Each structure stands twice: as C-alpha cells, then as structure tokens.
Amino acid sequence: MESAVYTSLTRQSGLAREMQAVANNIANASTTGFRREGLVFSEYVKALGPGEPSLSMAQANVRYADETQGTLTQTGGAYDFAIEGDGFFLLEGASGQALTRAGSFTPSAEGELVTPDGARLLDGGGAPIFIPPDARAITLAADGTLSADGRPLTQIGLYLPTDATDMSRRQGARFDVQGGLEPVESSVILQGFVEDSNVDPITEIARMIEVQQAYQLGQQFLNKEDERIRGVLQTLGR
Image: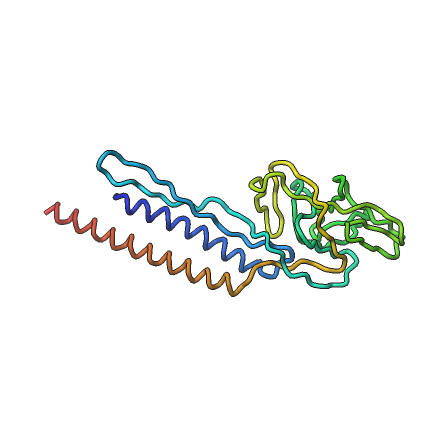
C-alpha cells in the first residue's frame, strides 16, 4: 500500500473521531453546564530515505473543552447555582471527585447538597455541604458563602485544574482531573440560575456537514486508489 493511502487512512480516522465529538455536542445542546468539545488535528512527518518523499500522517487524538461561558437561565430555585467567570464546582461521588459547571442541586435525606444522581457538592475546604433540616431561607452571596436564615454555613468551592491538560471528560457535563486543583476566587456564583450548554446547534450541524463531505471525499480517493492498484496487479498478472 502506498504512502498516500496511509496518509488518507489516518485522516479518515481523525475525521471519524471529530464526527463523534460533533454528534455528542449536538446531543448535549440542552444539557445544563455542558461544554462543547472539539479535536485538535496535528501532523506527523517522517523522512523515508534519501531521494524519497516524506510520509505525512494526520492525528486527532487531543480533545479540548470550549471554555466559552454559556447562557445563564433564571430558575428561581434556592439550590440552583451558576458560575459567572472561571472555575468549576467540585463533586464527590461513587466514582471519585469530578468537576462540573452544572449547578442544579438538592438536599439529600442526610441534609447534604447533592446532584440529581447523588454526587455531593464540596465546599472550599473539600467537605460536603450540609443544610440544616429546619432552615427556612437559604441565601447565597456572590463569593459563594451559603447562609441559612441569615447564619453563614460554609463557602461553596470553585476550582480549576493546575494543568488544563490534566482535565478529561467523564460523562455529560463532568470532568475528571488527574493532577492537582487550585481554588478560584475571582468568579461570582449566582443563586437561582443555571448555566446552559455553550453548544450552538446550528454551528455544530454546519460543522457536521463539513466533516461528512470531507470524509466522503477521502473515501472516494481511497476507492479510486484501490481500483488503480487492482488494475495494476491485474495487468502485471497477465
């Protein structure tokens, strides 16, 4: 198989991964706190030898999350929180800790603030947040200080990975972090709001069409190259 075919195959593989990312973005266009995902394409060039052309291979193995702020939607919920600025909420669940921008919580039977699937929201010290069962009014200050009936309870923690490349998507609007975390103090937390997905469905559909067309062109080239090689082998075999 010639070098051009190898190059085309690596490009097709990268386009297939990008199509999966685009499809996932569209599927999560209405997921609270979801961050659009993209791929970074890179080129690997290798010299084959004196007098021979170089071999270029395309790669698309690096994924990144678009950090653009999503639209904030007012819900009026006492336990709905939205981040205005940088940072993520820190959660603790059965699969360990995770970061998220999805700020819809509710008190559990034990009085801890949890996500719909039971992951606990952690404060600035990494501890679960407890809501007194007799609390009548829950208020949140812009700096994340949570109070019950005017009495401060704790401060919700906001975090960023020490190294952005250590963050990888777990599922939906959650991310795993392999390295360390650092606190964020410059952002504002709003009560009674949630952050919508930052996916623009029209843009993603347009990108899907572009990727499909690019993939089809690559497939056509591979088909023609296969026909050419078969023709050469048939001619030589006569």
